Length: 150
Image: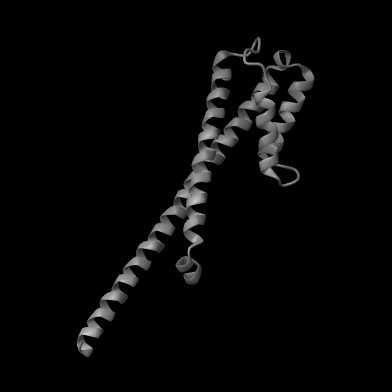
């Protein structure tokens, strides 16, 4: 092989490496955008759930009972602004308290109960999308080339 051929092969290999690197970095940027959008959706659903739980505790004290309504209101307030900074724990406590509520609370409008149930489903889906996006992004970031190009 002549030196011109070697230069051509090296140039082609370099062009392929640059194209692959560009594709990888573009994919990483898109995945990071996906994580941000998934987090925004999850945050919106968690905020909505806390608001509905707080409304339920405030407006339907008789249906819940005074003690349970007080706990539910406290968990909802803590989920919105955690005192200890651990939002995940606060959200888990609120979710557990909502799951423990009976399905048919007397005096609670069916629309509110349906809205709470629908929001619970959307929280589960939003968490799943967020976790998938984070997993995919971490997997790509863990590869050798993205770590080197950091």
